Image (cartoon, rainbow, N blue to C red):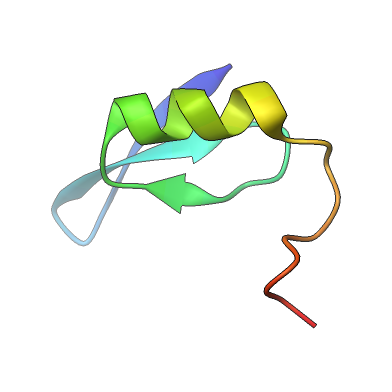
Length: 44
């Protein structure tokens, strides 16, 4: 599920599985479909 949150006067959409933030709800929803709760591959 994607959660709407506000930080620094900006609305963000957070993946409840991994906590990644997106500025577009559609991006967050698309990500969440593929999210496996592991760290993103670009974070090492």
